[in-house]
Length: 482
View (cartoon, helix red, strand yellow):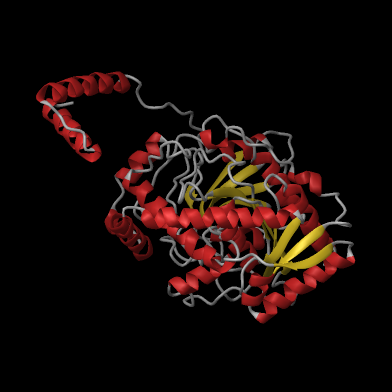
């Protein structure tokens, strides 16, 4: 370091905290900072092992679901042996370019994300990375710099931001795919594409090697054609990882233990607010699904979640602050999550802002401005509302095994129909509340858009923390009764 740079940094830091500096104190702090910087500089960059892979940009699939194709073989045996899987473009695969759906950056990791390692360790074959909304900050696929994704099951959008993963599963191009979910980005494409989407309990799946959108909301989970496959994939990727300190102390659920569980005697709360705000065809389909659960022996009763309708806005407020802060710090996250790994941080710091899409550009500028204007007060207020709502959900689940509601209030909108924040928030209305609370949530199709049975409609089960098994049992009961 140059001495003037250190002195200037010391003065700026002292000003932030209102600490007065004497000439002697300035010199002492500067000397200490220089010595510490030299020690830290000796640590050097983190070394990663890189798996060689042949990758080509492949836009030949009719849905634009894939971004890059590859073929990485996993273990010869394991619960995922024989399955072809893909991962979203914000999850690291060694040697495969990673763009987060943006033209502003391209990064080729020399390491696998924790979940990528676990897929391969469980026997899966990794066949590619999938298209997504830019930086995972939308719900339709239309903000992806690599072109929008087509929905194999409906005329409308495939949903997002895990749009390529949803479309690849719905089209039968893969046996399963990983998506990420900040406000519904696994469950929304599952609903619109007529497949299963599973958001796990918060922090039970490690996020090392994943590019966060909002650290306190992000989840990684599977999309699959059926509940059994989704549960099996989730079980293979969950569990603590030392590279993700936020997973320390987390329990490891066993989703597959619910596959053979009878739902007779289960008590389910049908969320009144979600039913009332849904389109008629969606509400009716979920009500029919509830009737089928009752026929299988479950008890279904209406339940109210006060302030439910406000949670999408709360989620948006939290996301905006956390995303703008993360990008401003080039992916550095202190204490509450993983943050970006060193090489990825360098790519974010060097990204070409001129190439950012208008949606992300607006979110960064407006979100940062709002945070600066109120000095973070809006974020604190949103977190307070979040805690109160989470307490309400916990209370409702004390007397019930699960909540059930439409995954989305509507079927897939047409391309170009989601044009403003109100439209966006409606797509998130039923999914984002459970990113705020961290509860597991499973979306199961009650209509798939195939075989002439109407546009896809998803039914969402929400259960207590670590109780993925009950969600699986309920989803399986619906699936086998179709």
